[in-house]
Structures are given as C-alpha cells and as structure tokens.
Image 1 (cartoon, rainbow, N blue to C red):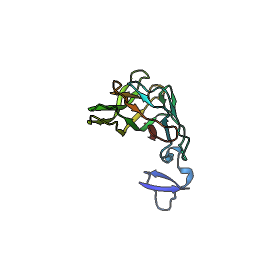
Image 2: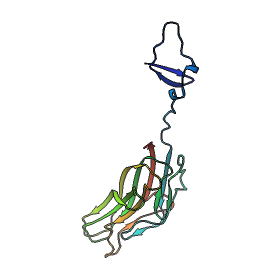
Image 3: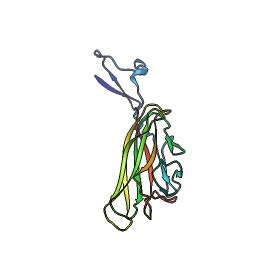
Image 4: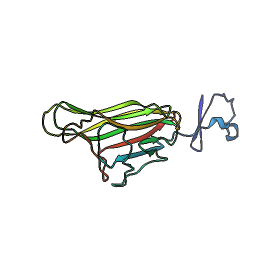
Length: 196
C-alpha cells in the first residue's frame, strides 16, 4: 500500500501502479480523505461559590471561573439547577476537586459524589471522593479528588450532577463543602477527549 501526501493531506491507496504511471489528484476520491484528529475540542470548568452542608444534590451556586486567566476550549458544558448538560456527544473526562471541613467528633467521613444518568431520570454514583478522619477533636480540612470517563452518546439523556453524602450535622461545626468565588476550592472540570 502506498501512502501519498497531497498538500499536506495523506491518502492510502491499495492500487498498484505500472511502470510510467503517476498518482494524480483527480484519481483520489472523497473517501480517500479524512479530517485530521482535532484533539480536545471542548474543555470547561465550574466552581462552587457558596458553602454546602447536609446530604443532598448540589443544585445551586456554580459559576464558570472568571479570575486568574481562566480559559476554556470550544462549546462548553452548561449547568442548570445543578444538572450539567453536554454540548455534543463524545467521551468526556470529568474531574472533581473539593475541600471539605469535617465536623468535630472523630470517626468522620464525608463524600462528594459525581452522579450520572443515561436516561435523563435515574442517577447513579459514578465516582465518590472521600474525606475522613479519626481524631476526636479538631476540625480538619481535606482536599479530595475524583474522576470519571463518561460516554455521552445522547446529549438529551446523558447528564451529571454533584451531591454530598455522609455529611455530619449533629455536632458543631457541621461538615461543610467549602467554596470560593475567587478561586477553585471546589470545582468540576470537563474535557472532551474524542468521539463516542
């Protein structure tokens, strides 16, 4: 098989040429040409701007970063009432980062959950980022991380949201998911890696 480059575009031909023949542009069909891989075509981020306590879906207080030179790529994921909707089908890497202040009292864990749906209705936990401590005093703050690769085959049905679980509220101070409007204390990042 010969690989021939025309104007920086490569085409594979299985034909065998005879002596004296040349390959011309008019002998290539449209099927001989394909778009070059585009790399990452969508990248965006959201951060939490208000602290959250208790165990629940996180339905508010998200913003696209607007400080420190933030930049995204291509069409962005959108958010409404805590539900994230994808701009196009594809394989997305979703990365979570959070700071959690644990309640005092010891033997405590707290979780930030990434929940996914493929039917726009039933959500299941795809990733759990866990903070924990065994000390009986103090109120430690921990940074937790999680990630998940989500195959978005239909933008109408495939969505994600964040939730908290195992947050303690019986002692003071209560377990708190921390936030900041001037920096990424708790955030979610979406990278479209390629086609589904």
